[in-house]
Length: 198
Image 1 (cartoon, helix red, strand yellow):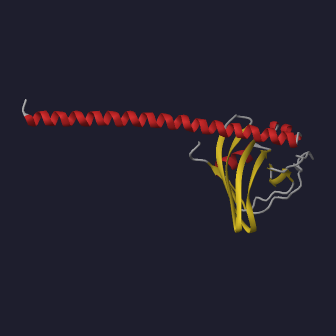
Image 2: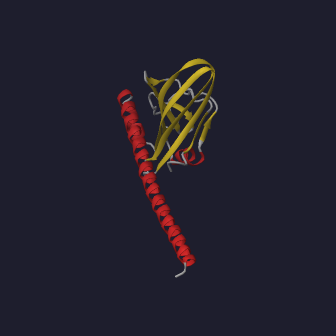
Image 3: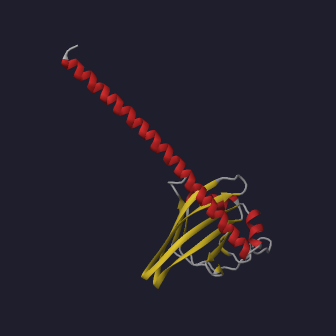
């Protein structure tokens, strides 16, 4: 075998080994990313469970309301206000009580007005019907006003104590570190599917 053929053979071997190593590394990274993603989903499920437990402690009637609903969504948010600008962001998940389907979501909120500080709070949506749940999850929602309506479902006179009606068939609880908030400010808030988690 000539020197030239030996060099070509060594070069080909080098590229084959490099390609194999690259494929192996890609496989390891994608497996680790998948495991990490499932761990993050599990963390979000756990946080959702903890948030619901806190809600049930503060408002025991909420447990029955959520269990008997078409579905619910829970968001844990961190907000800040600095001067005239403010925003908050968070992750959450929506659960369909009939099908068991989970949808992982994000939220963004932009606020105007004087203020200073950071706050953490949770929002829990309760959906009277599957159409409302599907619309929230599949189309996303954007609120442009405050929700301060009375907590009455408008159908049979039942009330979701401590919740605010934000639109037809949809109720919302807001919890802060001080407890359940009776007036909800959802101005300029957008809810949408989390493309990283779904």
